[in-house]
Length: 415
Image (tube, rainbow, N blue to C red):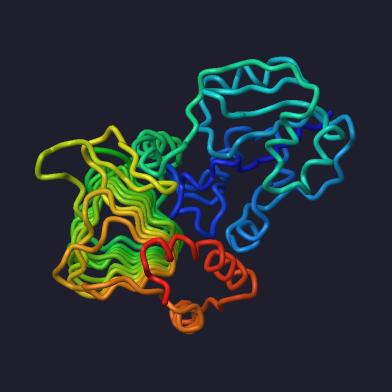
């Protein structure tokens, strides 16, 4: 009998905004990859069969893992997992336990096991898939599992996952490392095919492993401290960079610490980004800087779901949604939450701590970033990396613009 794997996002995806403004929870960077890939690796004997969630978000995600194309049998053992759950020791008990069971933690559905025949009618339900699961006649049990609810938990739990992921990688040296590059603990460093590490670059794996992806570039005067993943095609252009995960095709310079970069983002100049999560197609202008520690050393609060939430942590930077642009000298306060498609250019002044999607902040006031003008900019920015703004991208952005109008109205940002 074949085992199937179905990954779904639950109804609390909005608590991870702005990171989920146009992407599904499956896509969020965590550890050395993203949440969906982590689950596929955690259950290698299972055939990934479906990703379930918001249709418009899943269609806009271009890095969707390949799904198994074989025809499921009605009796196939099907493991259904909330993709926001972090694999852990509890998984063994689930895989060895009884079928026809639904497991929860702290009131959230974590996973279920049943036949494919029982599961199949719910796959097309999308956002209501969680309710479908609760309606099945399954026995219920609880377990002790981490389930990512808030954006700052990605930051808190990712370093442990990153170190574990990299420790499992086989070191390789398929790329080019200049003889004058400084390498500490070479046996903990992996260089992908076509990657290049230039003279006077430093790869320091004493504090954790490092992986340089295929066709990535590490230019002179760049210090990379592990644990760190540099995604395929990403370029590190000088500065101090460490304890971070970079998705594909980023351009990074300056100082970056303990952060997650979804991919396709720019930070080509000086400025500090720490304990932050950066969405796709973000461009941080020169000297853009995030604060990740309050002057009082107090706990940081972040705007989530229409309210400020106490993170319980003292080091929290910014959560920046996809397609955000900042002008030179932009200053982001501790715990900032910047919605997708926003444009900030009030250099030298602290930006507002919270901006809804499609905000236009000039240092004095917030107005709406017009959809037509934004889409024109997005087409140009994406074309510079050889990627078109395709219909799925545009549909996701248009849906976000429509669904967040009330948020902008609340700030008086809509004319």
